[in-house]
Length: 238
Ligand SMILES: CC(=O)[C@@H](O)[C@H](O)COP(=O)(O)O
Ligand SMILES: NCC(=O)COP(=O)(O)O
Figure 1: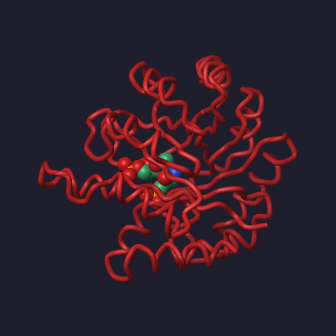
Figure 2: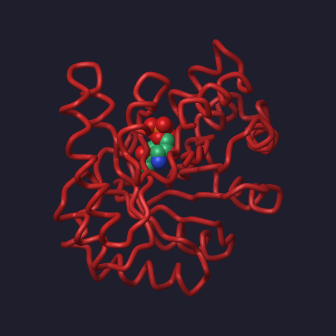
Figure 3: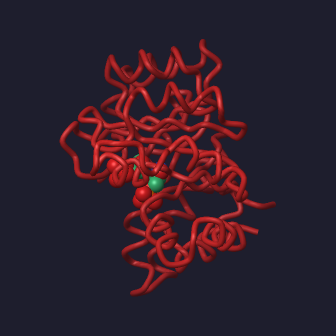
């Protein structure tokens, strides 16, 4: 079974914002990603709107034809936006507002009640929920107890260990994915995935449903072009 590729377009918005105009037009970028084969579009608006703006999420929803995945910390403003837009999926990430990028998964035990309430709101609105977690078995059990539909495995440790000893780097992820699957959870993965480390993850983890990839894909597109880059990522996922 092929794993779905959701392209995270944050970094295109970073370039747009550098000049204050609308180049590149991220609505066009998102549609082109879909046209080139992406099966989903991911955005991760941050409170300072350094890349994706809240308005972008509103503008994207009516034009996308693939799954829209909105990631972020579920503060009041974020939840208000998500419940209005009703994307296919909302991925809850515990980042502090000033975080440079995502740097940890949820403590699903300490935050059980908070996350349960948020997920209940998402479910009521018909939005699939996903919780960003480290490959820690206790956190996976906590995620299942909360009632989320899916988890997203935070793959930074896998990506940074891949070139040292990939068999070791992937081991906790394989155990986490197996447990999640056995508890009825769907399994997504993301963060620092690239053309080197993606295929091994995909081939080793039969439970994997979707990856969201942004930073490396945008960097590759500078050299290879966006269409060619997306095709290359899709090839790794077949
Ligand atoms: C949750 C996750 O791993 C990604 O969404 C990542 O945080 C992208 O965010 P930035 O583009 O702000 O780094
Ligand atoms: N959820 C992960 C994501 O959307 C993209 O992360 P990255 O590829 O920019 O590290």
